[in-house]
Amino acid sequence: MNLVLDIGNTRTKGGLFDGKTLVEHFYFDKNPLGQIKQLLAGHPEIKFSLVSSVLNHSKELTNSLRSRTNCIEFNADTRLPIKIAYKSPETLGKDRIAAAIGAYTLFKGHPTLSVDAGTCIKFDFVTAEGEYLGGSIAPGVEMRLKALNTFTDKLPLVSVNAAYTALIGTSTGESILSGVQNGALYEVKGFMEAYKKQYPGLKTVISGGDAPFFENALKNSIFADPNLVLTGLNEILNFNVSRLA
Image 1 (tube, one colour):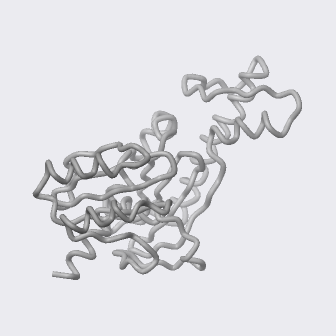
Image 2: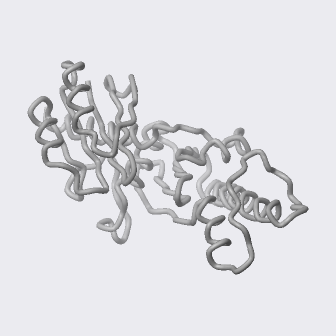
Image 3: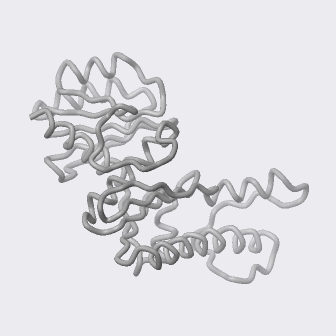
């Protein structure tokens, strides 16, 4: 049994895998040491673990995992199941790598595009042969709404409203929603179409907090997986464990 941890700025997400199958996923507090100790005590079958963190996480957490499991810390030296052809791999975020590997794991043999629709909208592309080429980063929906309010004198701060789909806004608030939400939607759709023209057979997988918004509008041409990063981290763990065997 595998345990993978994705430690972010505001929360930690974990996944328990039996081979390649996600058995259970968890959300932990910002300081998850106590909860993870309880999890390990309740699941003695966990043999391997991987920690991916954007923070300088507690050494005690890593030591606790190492005392009970064969633990790997995901860093620049970690071996990956895909080839990285990025010009500056040292600047490539762990979440982007994991999401790209997660999408490729789901659709091996196909070119894959992972879309992380969160604070930023991140696109990451892997060829059918398993080579990561790169992608793009754009402001997320909420960031765009905040930017309009921050960088203008009179435009109000409007909240995301997934139920609003009108093309023509009939008030300032509606006009902002139309511009931001429809603009982001057309942007994602346009990127997908451009990739498909260049790479026939493309499979696109979306994750992130705003994924439901895009999934509902593009449901015939996109796959949603809220645990895409966990899937990618588990694939990295399995790849390293298999090489140790």
